[in-house]
Image 1 (cartoon, each protein chain N blue to C red):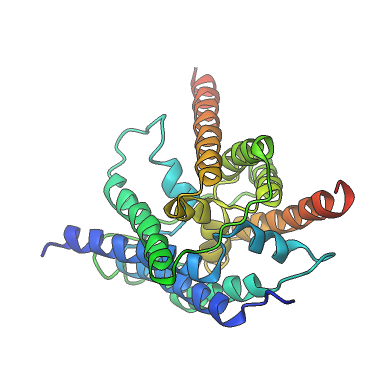
Image 2 (cartoon, each protein chain N blue to C red; image 1 turned 135 degrees about the horizontal axis):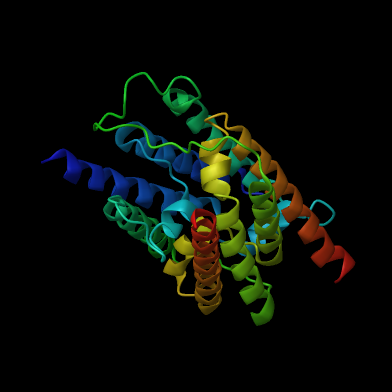
Length: 142
Length: 152
């Protein structure tokens, strides 16, 4: 528990919640990042007039993190995974979030608050599988 | 300022807040994420507060988006709520969620934090995001193909 950061982690969570709330209550849109990203990628569907705000939101996402990094002297990014695992992990994250129709933001933060059965099921599954994967890689294979 | 410009401004503000929130809570640090899921090791419960804090806000703010309530007032800047319409819990949802879980557990990055962490200039993040985009594009093409096959 030596790395426990309750205050900053709670504040960050509240900021994420307020962001999702603003996007929904003002613009009527769901802050599901895998969905936002996916709809900007080919093959493009016709009649999709929502490209503008999606690009703006993703730009803001990167700038927001950059702003935090610049004002605090850099945010820590420690990645244990080597190159093959990094590529495999990225690929299946891209496949899985597309097939499952969302990730932690869309299903977890927004979907659960909508009381969506699909989102609750997806969130329970990816949290469980993630914990199992961490257990296997850190305690069984290590 | 027109409503469209206002909507863009909201999208920018929401993006900034989301990205800063991810960085403040350190979900952008894969090690922090893996420590949160490592119940058998040095468990770091911090991110439970992040998820809980976000849900606490959306729980109250998403009232109009809940089943059966979408018929009420629309979003403040006009238009309608664009909400997912699917309700069936199918193999694609469950299998996709499980696959995503394996990816998240292997590296410690989910989609939003991976994109936000591009800001930190770490090459490994760029490799992960490139692979992730490839995975999504491949899946989209496969899905379009199977839909077209159903149509003919």
